[in-house]
Length: 283
Length: 341
Image (cartoon, rainbow over all chains, first blue to last red; front, side):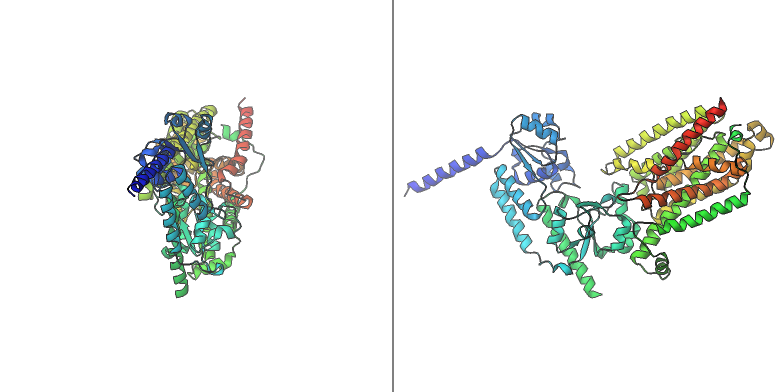
């Protein structure tokens, strides 16, 4: 009997050694979205570099954490200098640096942009495997499942309030995108899909006012730093139509990439949907 | 006396008739502008809703989107047409035009600095003031460089240099902005647009433009006298220093404020005075009012045209005026060269 704990200890030691061996020690992430997954899942010591965008707090949920690791500007020479043992990147980002990585025979993990929360969840687990941190990834996936299950069920399709994400320069986001999936989970009908526009379409201000959706979703309300592109979102015509109860802010960093931020976006929108439904009932 | 050599084929039209016809066209185009857009809008119904104080999509579109666009089209067009006529009179050079010689360009730079540094977010009038400061610097500089001895070539060359400098400075300022969209917005500043402007912008830009118009309205006799040469004008009792300052100030006010809210819309001040000049008997003073009205006609009509042509995001207004104006400019250069030689 005395042997058993020893055997167990030996087994544990082997397992730990095996995981440690499988765990890359110099990970370079080449785009904003993989940056955030790496920062969420890897040990700080595993990260050789993330992209400079990871430090931009309007785009990145983990901008503070990115301040503690080296950043690169997406060039091949930086990749070589970082002596990476794993390169992670989105399907369409930093193609030059990716070909440098391939030419040097480095392992490259390429992820597509997730189109819904299921794909996002699968990527989370896949990144966890690649980084040798499957436990952390599984814990995050479990939290995701719990919080999604805790949301009130969405109303029947015909009863869903119509919402639209109105971005800089009057662009909207339609079907087949993460944003659309977040709308769906929050129980909202996306105007961008209904107006028959493509995934990333241009919706003139006049048409938006004419359609007058129930809820206007914007990515930020403050005017700083100023641009004409975002001034459009604060046009008085929209102010006249969408009062504070019909307007919701979902910061870009919550859904520009797949990740736990998507969950917060769903929760914010579900709450706004609830408020709009209440006002509609009260009328 | 270059101005007097220009085509005389068309007989003079009674000034009041000419201005009356142009004013009528402006009114019709203002209504046309309010009636044109992405959605078909029953104008009378929407006006009824506005009168009843109702906030419906139709009333919002008409009041907050179509009205400021139509008003700015008229105001900006009139300012540019008027400024073109005044600059041509002051510099005694038929190629002087705010867009061509860099006045609009420097106005855009001034407005860009005021807007992207956030100054105009704190103090709204910084936007037109920035534009006016840029325009003033440009007109004063041009006058100093090429005004006195009015050589055709020296003005156009100085203007070309000024225009390039203004474009580069604008690009630099936009690149320095921390907002990622800013660097793409050079298209608006260099090519102008009236899309999605607001009534607030009309309120910002209209006062300086109107002030500029008033100052120019009283400069007519001086411009007529100047067309006879500086010595003659002086002997007629005009204080040329004050006249020059007045015209430079007025042009800067009108063009600076126009560019600050609509970007650079080129060639309006070139095409319009040239088409109208023979009709007023080549008197620079008498050209002012018709040029203002004609400028409004051109800009309003062009702005309606781009909305009718639009499929995706709209064409910039300055693209259309340049497509019309640049060939006209070339034609003018060839013609003037023939006359000089």
